[in-house]
Length: 328
Image (cartoon, helix red, strand yellow):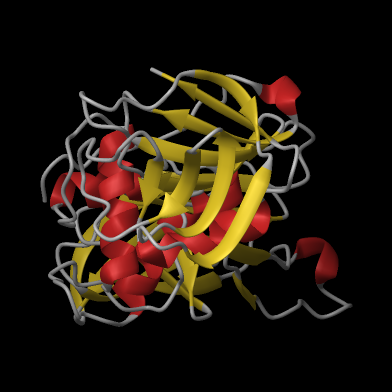
């Protein structure tokens, strides 16, 4: 896979901690003072993702399995094994580290699945004179990344989830459809990678690692739209918070889009005679509106065209009086 950034951990808002706990048998009351301590192991995979109630990642991407052992007993270790397709691909013996208050111990192991399929992680502690025998397991799926237009399933749900988390407008259908292509095109524009709708390895890696941020220039304008013509993107923002990002086609060189700070003064639903669709006028005849085509380069007569399928969501969000800021 191209551009995999091993070792990077996703943002905490996109992380999921899944826990498996299996307790050792308690010692009898009569022998408690001399028997090993009763304990538990908890396992979590904080940089996997949750899709359809299941933990998922992709092959080759590093994830971290974290363990918590209660109580902490000095000098103890755990044996961690990882299996894919029933075959062991990783084995580590790890020391249990004491937390600052001494209430529990921790350990962390990193791994990446060698291929698509289910991965099972097992952490075990053999019974010693001070801590009882413990065992915990946690599973996650490494999803097949080989997709194209028309593909559907958990991997496409994951990609759409990640695009939405970065605020790109995308109906989350679970299908690699036209809406997914438009959102990917906008994502590539934001990263200065050009204009294309392909879901390649580099794109997958950057999406899962949470890279890509539209930087709002006019947070003091409250609810507003920003047209960044250098990126050919329109973003709806509430103060400094980005709500949705869309690809746009601004004015061609002979009829450039006007630059400056304006306010929406008129909204016209449906089609106008010249093909403008759900139009938000912000200066004389200049508007943000749907149009077919809205190509991936400046081609309009001065307006900011968006794809027909995106126009209604922008129209419904913008109100009369909202700012529209246009710049390079």
